[in-house]
Length: 320
Image 1 (spheres, one colour):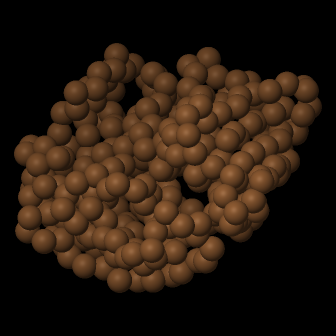
Image 2 (spheres, rainbow, N blue to C red):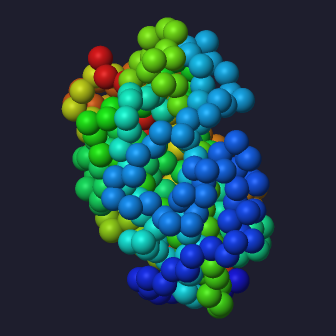
């Protein structure tokens, strides 16, 4: 693998072969074949309806759990492409009923329908708006990245989404290799339909905070430490924290400067491409309006060339 030193915005896509479509459907499960086939063959048009609920193996005392699934087309990623989003891969959806999102999972496959030998996922967002690089935006949404491919919210919490709100799904990719590759993505949304709620769920809101705007930057040989400070202008509690990070990122910390205390730190315990931990708590960490917070990201670069980096926290919180 080479160190990636450039950003490309290539836009090639190809429809999946029949063989890949069969693999996508098999991996998603035969029960979802009609729904997955729709998206694998045609891709989503503007405001496609999410209606093909099926029972989930997940359980919750707050209601019967269902899943919604879709699969993308194959996308060609050119060598050296970073934080790469294809307009053809992004999708817009609408619902016909209110749901509570309680989990989210993404999985990449190559042109043979197998897990790729390299990790080409940068990150994805599923939310009520298009994610941009403004730090203060509040979303109703959920994320995944290469080292946090699956998120499950703490029990009793959910992200409420309603039929009157347009939904946007955005995947981003990295190809640090020397050859073009073709990949497709599978997505599983774990939800409780509002009609199936047994006990009231508490709504969560989301924000993405990055140490760098624009979010993509490069770390020189040796390493890098950078930070960002911000305020949250409301009272509430943080119930979930997940990192967005690239290879060679060591840690991302959230620190409460007003109280002089660490909220949480996500540390990479394995090699430069090992999974990252998440913070998940029913009780949550209390937020007070006007307090100052600091996010610090640490990268270690043992190579002789600059390496690409992103570093931020995806926060899900309740309001009081």
